Every structure is written in structure tokens, then in C-alpha cells.
Image 1 (cartoon, rainbow, N blue to C red):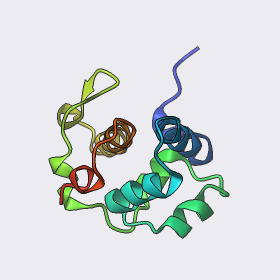
Image 2 (image 1 turned 120 degrees about the vertical axis):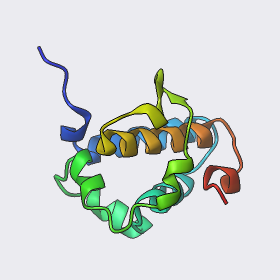
Image 3 (image 1 turned 60 degrees about the vertical axis):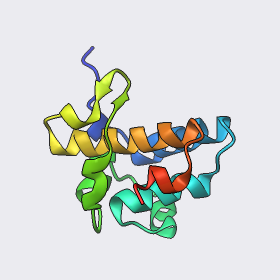
Image 4 (image 1 turned 180 degrees about the vertical axis):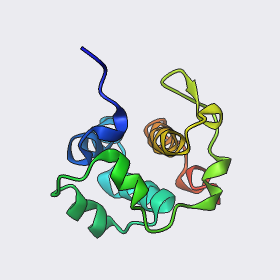
Length: 116
């Protein structure tokens, strides 16, 4: 059976996994929403509303109101993949959010996560 493309997965299934990863390490849903908003330009309310729709994870990123140009500063490894070396721009943005949530879960201060 072929592996499902991450871009085709349901946002409503993926996002709660990111939240759970952060919460398991003592962080909050609000903090995950904040890093997601920083990256994509969505508000926390828009993110919550999109979780109630059938939007795919890929379309969540494709439809983002304002991808943050500072996301290029997000570097490092997530799931054994260097974020800055991912060639497909959509997959790089997806890995970027994974990396931001990883940093959150590892206790990194918010101002460093948001590259302020």
C-alpha cells in the first residue's frame, strides 16, 4: 500500500496531533496556535474553524493568508530531515511547522521560536 502524501491528509486529523505533542511536554494549544499563526497568517479562530472542515493539510498551507517570510530562518532537523534542504516549497512549509512545534515541545522560549 502506498504511503499517504502528507499534503492529502486531513488538517482536522494532523493539527490535533501537533497540539498533543506540545501539550505532552507542558505547552498549550494557544502556543501551538500562536506559532501556526506566525507561520501562516491564520488567526487562532480561523485555525479552529478550519479544523471543523474537510480541508487537507496541503490546502491549509496553500490557502494561508500570509506565509511569514521569516520562516526561512527556521532551520534544523525534524523527523531526520533538514528543513532548509526540503526542495518542495509546500513540504518545506509543512516541515517548518513541525520544527516550530518541536521547538515548543522542547521548551524553547517563544521569542526564539518566532525568530524575534
